[in-house]
Length: 155
Image (tube, rainbow, N blue to C red; front, side):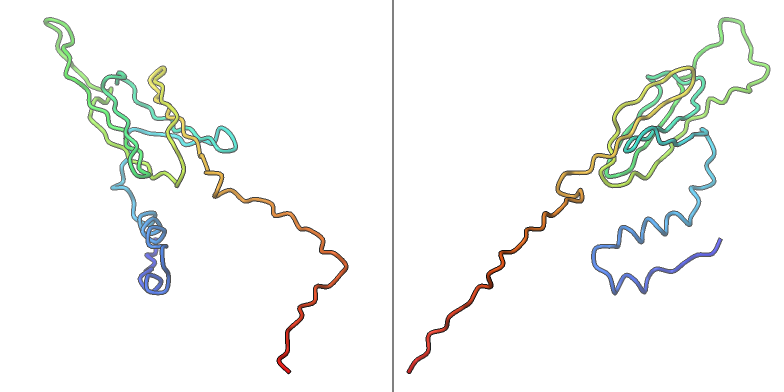
C-alpha cells in the first residue's frame, strides 16, 4: 500500500487536522491484530452493531469503554481449575487476553451491549444534534412595489 503524505495540506487548512490524522491511521494496519474476530453491520438508518466472537469469556471478564470517539473492548480470562486431578492435554480454545479498539465517528454513541452464545453485541447509534442537521429555508415572495429611499439634500 502506498503512503500518502498530508503534511502540505496542514498549512493550508484550519480545523481539519483530526481528519488528516484519521486518514493517516487508516493506512497503517492495527498491528495485524486478528483476535477476536468481529463483524460491523448497519442495522438501520443511524444504527450499527459490532459483533465479536468472545467464546469462553463471561460478562464479568469483558469490559467496554467509550471515550473521545474511541470504543475499547477488553477481555481478560481468570484462571480456573479444570477440576481436581484433571490435566489439560490439548488447548484449542483461546483464553488469551485481548484489547480491540474501534474509531467512532462524531456523534456516535454506544447504546448497549449484550453477550449471547459466545458473541458480544455492541449496539451503536448516530445522534446528530438538531443544529447540525440540514434545514429547509422558506423563500418568501417580495411585494410588487419597489422600496424607494429618499435622501435629504442640503440646498
